[in-house]
Image (tube, rainbow, N blue to C red):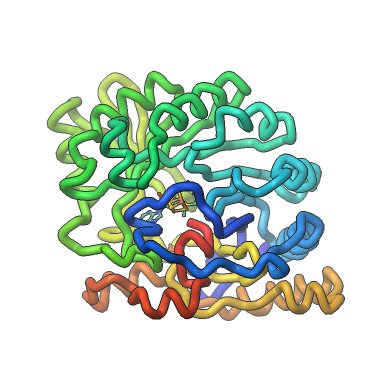
Length: 340
Ligand code: SAM
Ligand code: SF4
Ligand code: SF4
């Protein structure tokens, strides 16, 4: 039985950041010129990640998503995937990537036993991609998606952060591309998480606005009723195509949140907005047993009361969440460090 927190939410889904490095600089995530990186000696080895996953699964977690930073930058990543895929308690093993290196790696990820892939892609236009990320890459990401499908990933997703006045004119084009690429598109409301230092409430395109725009172009949109703790609400278009919307900013879903995050150096955060995490690397390297780690994880989860996005919405404070000076002193508050 999974541990349950104060709001009766089970410990289920663990997102593991395998590196804080990234080969893009998305303006909603890493807009600054300089970053403070985690010391290399602190980065968990694959053996250490495996040991922590064993402790988490014993406390109830059964879904693992690898993320970053950009996870495909982590050397020998398929070795970690194989290690995790061999654990029967990990029922779902997924990865979120910006897709830049996917064309060469998709086959290896699949062979290693990865179940599902999500590729982030915010625009189909080369010039806009460069403005948004500071690099050229649309073609590389599209090649990556093609390779993923060829490699046998059937449950492909495309995650798109929608920003007003930046890419809100591409919703329909992205849906058309998703259909052709064999991937379900999920539109994500722009969030004021750590890292989003240029965030402004006026740049947020709400779920309601997205639905209106898509409906006006493609016909009536039907909500799909399903019992799920997944963050995306799903919808169906008249032609049968499905898509999702993750409305973390205007209609947060904290009440069903079973997710927590482990940074590449072993700090465990129970909420995307949490200011403090728990160091698991220390006890692990000091020789804590799996049972001790599981007990620690279970006790901490049992006391969890986080519902960061709901609190942000309720307080009405719509400044960027963490000022850049604080982020420079506490890089664990960055989205690219704690893993989106
Ligand atoms: N680098 C990989 C990628 O981009 O897919 C994995 C890590 S990234 C932090 C994970 C997800 O967080 C991406 O889909 C990204 O779009 C999302 N993200 C980052 N900053 C965000 C923000 N301010 N609002 C909403 N989503 C954000
Ligand atoms: Fe973009 Fe992901 Fe890198 Fe952040 S971590 S800058 S979202 S590619
Ligand atoms: Fe979960 Fe925190 Fe996100 Fe709410 S804000 S859905 S509690 S991670």
